[in-house]
Length: 114
View 1 (tube, rainbow, N blue to C red):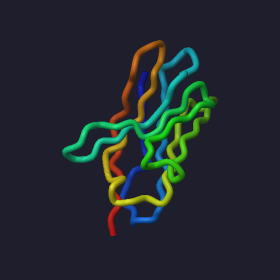
View 2 (tube, rainbow, N blue to C red):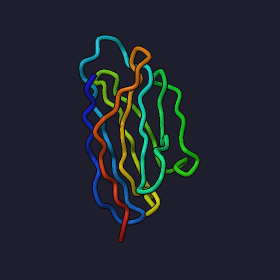
View 3 (tube, rainbow, N blue to C red):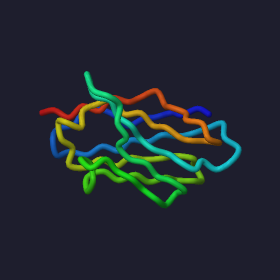
View 4 (cartoon, helix red, strand yellow):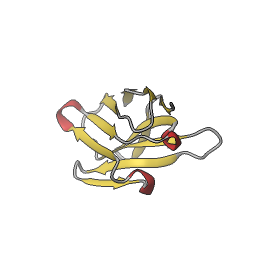
């Protein structure tokens, strides 16, 4: 399974970004897709996850601002990030759980700064 993430960048506080992550090399449907992030000096944390294409979970600090959704036909998961804050600055990693194994993308930098 290969994951290709894109969409990071520099944005001002209050701005928006959309991350995308396309999965390839799968035969069956991917059950869990999601995004983690890691800021300098901090542990990696789960930002959002979508399970079975329906159930979503979010980090408390991003609830109401971030939205995760997927396009099953394209095997792609998206993270729409609105009202971005400086504390959202981190490297964002997409991941999938496929046949009981986790796979990770290469990470994309999101920087929120004026």
